[in-house]
Image (cartoon, rainbow, N blue to C red):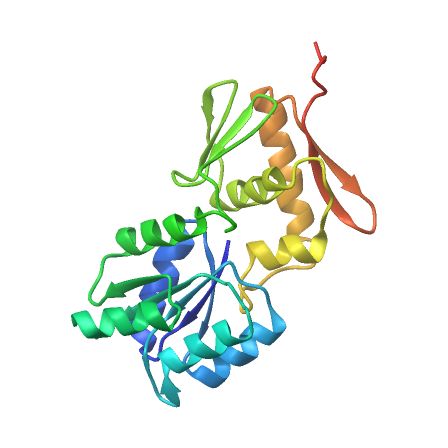
Length: 228
């Protein structure tokens, strides 16, 4: 899942990015309303994390602008403004949730997952194909009921493919979902991740296949219903 963080406190932003990265999120960070608007033009995000007191404007104005153009990206406000009126104003402006600073990363991650599980959002908790099951909240997956040890990147990749089981996911879409803008990504990083995931699934006895569609991307296929 790819998140957009707008926060002008560099130290806090670093802690948030580090913490959410460990939870399986890719996070792009900008410090201003202008930077956020630019990011929204050039990339698709599953969720926006937004501070309100920004150097070049009020975050609530950005919320209103996003909603005015019918952008339904979930927005979680992160702010020191903890009064009742502040929370009401934020939600009425179009934010989906409101978290008052200071907060703990586990709660932030849980709120992110909760927003992404809402109807029409990007995240469901249980994903199943064949004998493979992934729990997106716990960031773990199972083959025939047995836990499989895997890296966070492998879990991220499997999640994206499971959500599109039977459909081809283009390489740019996979890269967009797995890596933040400033991540150091080698030209064959995605191919290497796919190769490792295939080996992981095969060694665990998975009955799904990750197939390459040359020049396009990858697709995960579950066994047919009558597969023995």
